[in-house]
Length: 495
Image 1 (cartoon, rainbow, N blue to C red):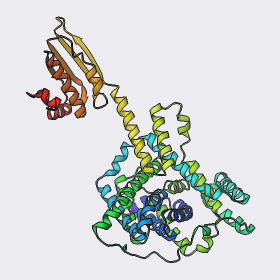
Image 2: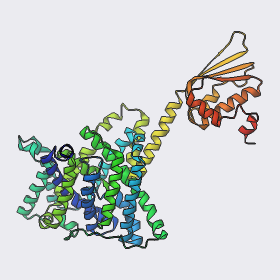
Image 3: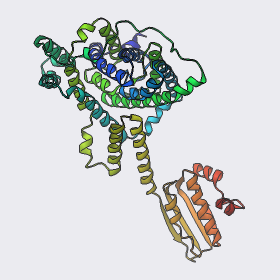
């Protein structure tokens, strides 16, 4: 037990505590903003962020990753809240948690291996752009003081780490927030503050069960929204886990993370909070500030609640310009600048996948759609590329009566037409040998292509012998092939 606590909780205590405080400060305006997007009271987002962060610290599969209420999830809630109200949102949150737990036990987290690096890069770049765009309202139609404070905040964030000793000991985003707050109060600047974002709650969240009828009608109302929230929540969480894995050179348990996200959302729903998931921006703030363990996530959640209940008067005077500076730092740090340079040397297909993912996510603000299109494009490009590696070599014996075809490569839906076209089906020979020793048949389309070739040769009067099938290919050919059946031609033509 002591070893576990040391390895997962107290190996990086000071940095985890400080980074958690920074994250908590950044969570407040975002949680309020996401509540406004979803059309609910600010306390719904704040309670959700507290509950999810605290619970995921104990049950999540990725230490150091921050989960809370998010914009991607909030966008999916708008219609449900507008048409049915908060209680149905809480019910949908509970169902989302159940579905995510089921996904974890079904090991759906392993599906992340089908997401290519170009899709992940596009996802990261799109989020960086969205994070930056989300700050623009705070920089529009404002006085010069806001621009000056934001610029000063960025100067502190990037300059403070260069100070000897102290520069590495205290997270620069925390220094930025404290310094700009003191300056704004001391100079009496009339600029937007956290208190202007909305009313902060003044009580602890209480346990409650959503006040909805437990009927099939309720289930059909919330199920579509819960499925959408489940997919987007797990997708963003898995993507964020991948990024944090890369930043920290550690690995995460994705299936455990799926289950953890589900448990956290059930907890949020039972305490009056909306559904949430991992947050790439706050996770990067945490990592950049030195957070690595579960203690940083727990600190973020606990300190968030302490601030909104105990330090609310201090919290309200934090200038939004300070938090905007922190989030701009996040967007700059999140964007993969190397991907711009790599456009020249990477294959065109890789670049198309990355740029398309970015464009769709930014245009729709829907991570699931962008990533789904990126994965589909990557799969199509891959299938097309592998299909080109299939080759058929032919030779004829000395008497000119036996033609031998050696098939090399992968035969599947993408290469099946090329496979058929590689045979001279009108050649007048007595016997055809098709050697598949160096080939592999993957699907029914490939089997159908073999059937067509064999039957067409037989129709021309040639004897056909298929040899060299490996065990896996032989299994699929034996099961779905028809060329050895008595009525093969009728079956193939659909009669």
